[in-house]
Length: 230
Image (cartoon, rainbow, N blue to C red; front, side, top):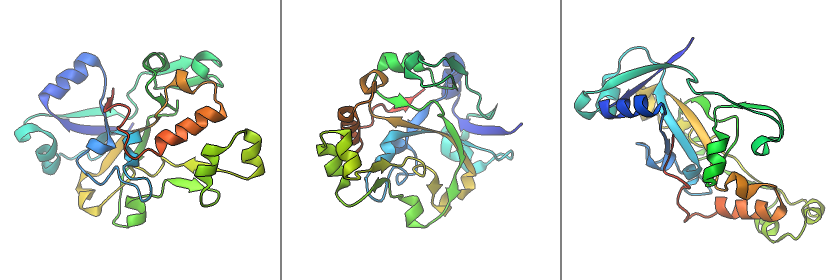
């Protein structure tokens, strides 16, 4: 079994034990201020939340120094994926099939502020690279220049098909790379990517709702839907 380690304060440990939750911070608020940036969409990382750990069994003086107050705190060890599992049947909470997930869909639909795919959180090993194309990924793909505007103005699904209008936003590489100066962290992180539309708000899916979803993703001035996810 693989274990992961997290350096933190005694106060944070007390909250983890009391609430039995881990905090996922928005990429806008992590210590590396570049992480939320994309090549084409500004701070697209505002739709990504992370809980940061390391797989290094040896204690790290830099990590004690960075993440505990005056180097007084704790180093937590947990097995990977220590989360409670929820089971939902097809049709429950808009699930299209039977689902096992770490996401409390009942809580999320009650809040109705954002949506999370059931496969989240994913566990990724951070890669360290100074290549700009990786540090600042291109997020939006269009079938041709101006396709987004045509998508937002389309009147029907048939029009999208006829004009071959396709638009897609990729969350995969956001929050995956950091500069090589951070490689001492040997970081693994749990990552949650969210949709800025609530489950009740976005279902059933229609062209109008998809257009509103794209408008929200493309709004560079909008704040993250929430600052933290627990």
